[in-house]
Length: 138
Image 1 (cartoon, rainbow, N blue to C red):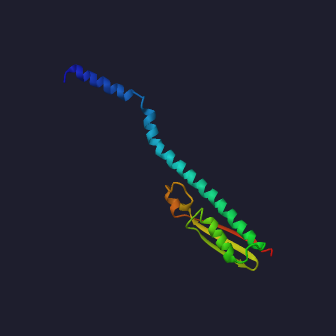
Image 2: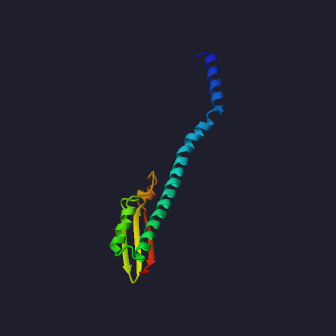
Image 3: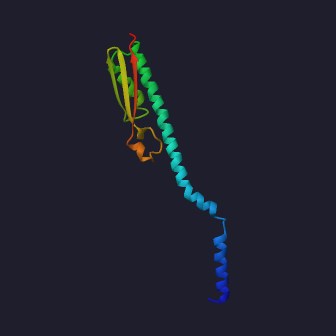
């Protein structure tokens, strides 16, 4: 290589190291996966809380219906809850008992049924429990 080529190469390398034209692209490439993971975490947590509130409403409505005599037995209440909750969480389990005039219902759902992305490993092994008790009025 001639001296002119070395000078050109040295000048190009020097300009390349001083240039900041691609610095925002590099930062974006580094931070984008972190922001997406954070976004997925927030979205999944919001969905879990939202669906938990929906299930709580279903359980409370069923317990209330049983307490005023619209449903006769704990099996009827349990079936009603299961049919409504299975649309939200297909792997849910439901237990309803009537003891000493108190109607108690519990629903256990895997959190993985309630999330949109399932990217967060902690949500895969988490179970969401919704319980409600109501005093019988009949």
